[in-house]
Each structure stands twice: as C-alpha cells, then as structure tokens.
Image 1: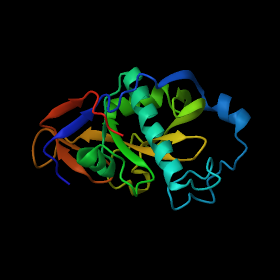
Image 2: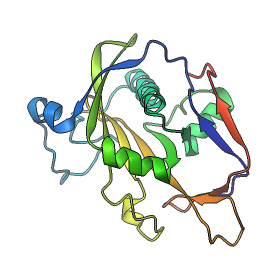
Image 3: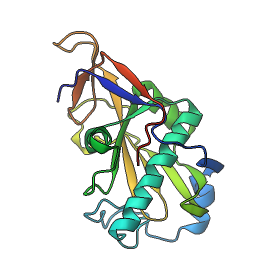
Image 4: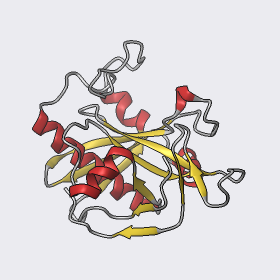
Length: 215
C-alpha cells in the first residue's frame, strides 16, 4: 500500500501519570517469577496472545483496557528513550477515524526506523519495564523482545516479518513492532520506505501528534 504521508507519533495520549518505576533485564525478573512454558511449541492462541504468558483470553472490556495500557506504556517508553515511533495498519486507521482502538483488534501495530530498531536490539532487547498507571495501581511488567532476524530486511524473509514486540507479561497481549527501512533503489525514486511484510510508503509529510486525546 502506497501512502503519501507518514504520521509520526511522539506522544499520542496524555501520559503524565504513566511512567516506568523499574527497568530490569528479563532474565532477572521473568526467570524468578514466570513458571509458564517458554518453549512456544504449542503455538499462540488465535486471539493473538503469547501462550508463554497468557493462561486464558480476556473478556472484551478487560482486553480493551489492557490494550490501552499496552499502547500507553510503549509510547511512554519510546519517548523516554528518544525513539520516534508511529502507529500503522489498523491501529493507525483506528486513531484516524475516532482516536480509538478498533473494537475487533486484540493487538496493536507500530513502526520505528531501522536505526532505532538496531538501537533497541543492542541496548534494550529482553528488557522488562515495570509501570504503574491509574488503571493499574499495583503495577505491571512489560517486556521488549527483539527478533534475532530483525537485521535481515529482505521481504522474502516472510517467517520473520515482525521485528520486535512489546509484551504485557501478565495478559500475554502484545504490540507488533516493525522496522521501516529506506529503499534506495526503489523504482518510484527517493523517499520510499518499506517493511518486511511488503508495505511501502513515501515520506513526504511528518506530522507530530502531541496530545491528541486518543483513547
């Protein structure tokens, strides 16, 4: 799909009450507290939950609240790390139409630049961030997991189109993170970016959304 603009989200929601209180390595935290099967041999449930963390699918309202916290904490973390990120696919359409998560979505989609993905992989892969929010006063752990095949930008690598994920380690819900790469040899000319799933767009306008009041 060709897009003639790129929406860069620096702060989609008002996040003054959503700040990490801890950042530790996943082995330190999850190695002591998580006793679920981490092999992934059984696959993931159809509702897009990580089986390694999810014991059951959430009810609709509970899932919607968890997704909101998932997006808020991800955006807050990227802002703190100085990473530009933007919504994509159904998540972008949901924001564009009514600043809401699509009612049928059980995950979210975002992108970062290729350089940012290398930065996250080098310094923050398998890091766990502990957040407290008004919706989660007891706090919750979120883990950044980078696909070891993220550096292969070839679109023929269809088994690894998702470069990283931001995971709610309690519910198993997650955000798909893909790297947007400049295609210097694209027949359409300069300014073309693409990701491994084949989506392409031209960078002509960068709009910074400060506090949109989105849900």
